[in-house]
Length: 69
Picture 1: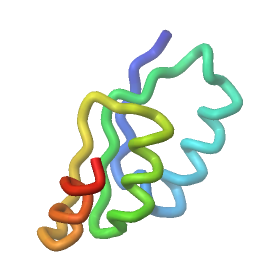
Picture 2 (picture 1 turned 120 degrees about the vertical axis):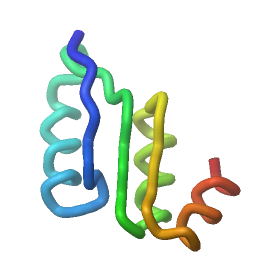
Picture 3 (picture 1 turned 90 degrees about the vertical axis):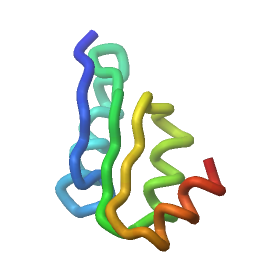
Picture 4 (picture 1 turned 45 degrees about the vertical axis):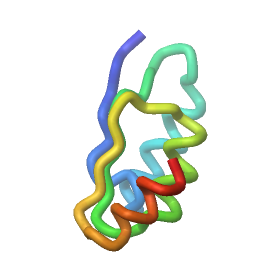
């Protein structure tokens, strides 16, 4: 199984990458997700993929993510 980090997981490329990875669940393990400011989507992704690390740049969104996870 390949361990993978998705930088910009809440953007269009990140969302599409995660969609492709869903088709190959036995081949990939998401170990890290990062986002700029979309805390709500990042929380959804973190709950679904259970990565070891989650990061977000926007400090207000970071507080939301911290409380939600």
